[in-house]
Image (cartoon, rainbow, N blue to C red):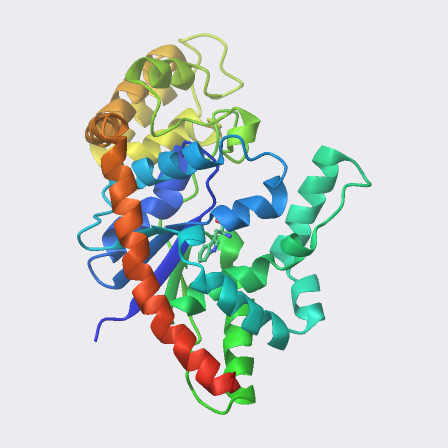
Length: 333
Ligand code: TRP
């Protein structure tokens, strides 16, 4: 039997290249090796944005479109919406009962989220009960399919540790090795920074979206930070101190291109503007097919909705099997 992966993303709207390189690309490969479940975590979005739901529906669809365009194949993988699988909420109840409060309180990722929330909304912003339950709900997502592996970014690993702890505790309490202790699968790709050299993020306005047009991408690339010590084209450049552009080359260029850029930069034969123009073209070429598929799905939204509804139905079938076992083990009425 194939091993199973589950992973999800919160619906934060259109995804950027950080999402693509850091997570989605990995999923696209893994879907051929594992039985795969990918879902849009709309309940998790509510943990911090319960009061800003105007765009939630659209954001769910946008995330799904980016996945489909990137090559997540609904014929191979099950793609679904968390809130369309209510069994997850029911499992969340059982897992919440067996999870000690201090396990969630010491979750470092959750602490970071709380810090960000406070910095945005002021010191007296409230942390909701739902947000405290974030790692338990995430465990429910993963354990709902009794996954063996969870492909995520490094920032999510602490959550998966809690999932393993909860799975072990459940098995001990109810005296059956029912749940797998799922392991994270980290991607091997280096992290892409934003155009300003900081972490790429939607809210930092330093990102390139999968959905950006070629023109916008080219324009954004022209703003990428380069070697700050270089003022004129003829100044000798230092590719290793180039803060963004050369790093992007190392991600998107082939070996020959990278060697050529390095050589010309160091000799002062290629200016930063020229370098970034060419870089923009290379990135646009890389995403041309994905963007074309994206445009297709944008004009066939009903098809996207069908995929999400069908996937959610399939996910529920698996979820119900697990839930029945859980209720039997806990000895519910
Ligand atoms: N917490 C994840 C993130 O912010 C999203 C997520 C929710 C998830 N449930 C999950 C990821 C289950 C993997 C498995 O990116």
